[in-house]
Length: 421
Length: 154
Image (cartoon, rainbow over all chains, first blue to last red; front, top):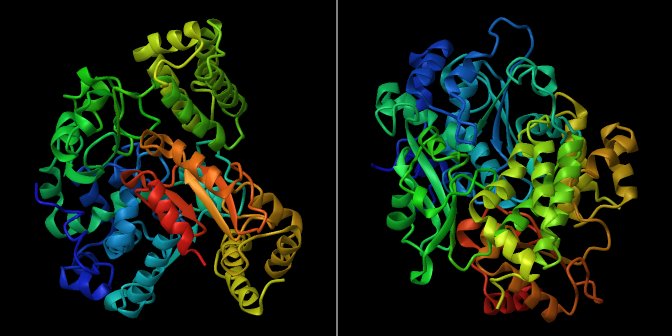
């Protein structure tokens, strides 16, 4: 597949508007404003089959279509750039190297849903990315792609970069909206869904960076072209972030449905130092760990579910035979315990205790009952929280218990870690 | 306390958003750019500038981990210890930094120059191990690289 989102990712100073224009930039915006009514754009994105790249895979055009048309309230579009799912670093690459591709997508999406003020909510740590975006936005205003009467049309749009404060939970859309409103980043009960009552109580569409970066390509090349890439139910290109024990970690743009084996062994160069693969997380740490016998699965929203995991953000974390899976589970649980917003008791308390139990097991102080106790705590978190963080938090421990239970028992029986030299 | 320039910027945020409370986080980022830390008096100043109650500002601020409190070293060294960085040796780099700076994680050197902390995923897993010092990322770390980075900080 010819690269689409990453076509100009290494082009010198692609982040400058003149270079973006030289490489065909903002033609899609001109076409969208001139040739399409907003509802026609919604239909086009629906027809393309584009699904959200932030993790949930919800059809983007369908989400846009939920925005009520004839409401007196303003409508908002938020680009979710709070990239924080461990293992994921694709959005940062787009933001830093090709920010106008994202901004063009945001403008078209905002036009499609009728928003006149849009936000890019970017994680606080991405100070450089925020600066890049602000410079690019300034250029876009100067060229007439943002502001009043965009490209001579009657459409106005302002775009603001909003920096978060270092909270993973704010990547969850309802927490993000609370954060943007200046509150603590607590999750909200759904319904109402953001498209009905979102930020400032108004209809709001929240799309991921990679999702929005696809929009200009769909407008230029058509829905059928997009649908012809990837698989019928997960069309389009996907950026896979590969990290861990591989020879060539990095971002790889490939068609949806590329087998996990091909991603690890062909694109990322295989396992480091000629070691053997032990386990792989296919979509960020909230997705179940897979053993090497499962890696022929295709990486798209549906196929990867057939082998018991999820596509998530497409963040592939590779672990070789030297990895202690109990320690890996502990690292992931510590993360969720730290990042739980504290609103829902099962998640706040459960992640804390699971983290404490895993700590004592890794230190050789675990008891045999700890395994059952952990499973019981997981049971008390599952589906008992407002947002998906709770369900995600129990994934690493449950999937390592399922596939590597012996390692837990070894730690407990021998009162030490079998992988420590 | 806050410089006039920072105050002006914060005042501009007040009317930028549909609700003024949205200006709290942007204000905090300006304060960090200016002073490098916050304290209760600064939060009160922000509240006055935004026409909010001090409680509203401190309630929001205390949720977020990105804004260092007064007393943090001139350079806040934040080492990622999440999975991808740990797989590639983050833990030994933390130990190395502890020995080199002669402090434990969470502490500040006596001269106030460095504070060492561990943080969760910085979103740079393809170039692990990674650390952030104040606003800047340092990637593909090794002990030698850390030596060089610390020497070059003024």
